[in-house]
Length: 350
Image (tube, rainbow, N blue to C red; front, side, top):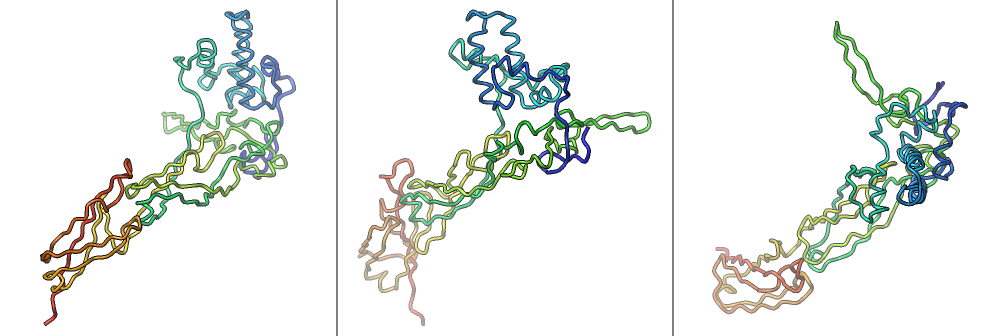
């Protein structure tokens, strides 16, 4: 029982280790790993041992059964915490819903594929984050690589997101490591039971002594990081193009990091208006220029000079098409849309 305890990762509290009578080492011995072995080390050790213990490889069914029993407990975070606290007795009666899916591992090892019928295991992926980044029309046309700073939370490398060293983390006594508690409510003759997040451990299922918290992250499990990342905008990309940077969103212990999605927004241009792969340029000319001819000189979005000499009479709402001087096509940058010149004739003031 805890006295003055605190939720895991929040600081404070005192906890006791596993009962002295609990046998909480045999599973580690079967796999040949120490008690502080990482999840990756446990999986590697299991695969090595399974190759030897499998009946088809010279082992016995009993050896293989004991090996799977150990891996089933130690490969699951909650089961491992319960085993470390209470030994094999603490695992009795569990339905195995959080157990290891070693069937898929074995299928892969012995038959060379990953096609076992068990459910797919692995940590869930965190939420993706969208951020807007503005680009000029010229950058949309030519393509550009922009470097920017990505400030985010990442899993603490010192404690691997646990908030403390493994030997200082204990299972919450109130919820027995499940992170949930059953609340019973009586209303007249009716009795209802609902599951709610454990208030003692805040749903983590773990607790840690205040003086054993990780000094690098103060027991939170995450630290702030400032990374320089590159956002690559391809030539001809449309407005609001989504640049996906896989795994660059914030990290949380026990989860795969989500994606950082840069939404490329287009800055207004002083000369051109974009319509897909085409550009519109509004030219103001005098009545004399509309009747007698005129010349237009400007630079396109790729910096190329354009000289247009018009000798025909231009109507007040006329449009002149310059083929191949619009935006590049993203899938074929050698191909470009058109530049449409919209005329606005200014008449003499009376």
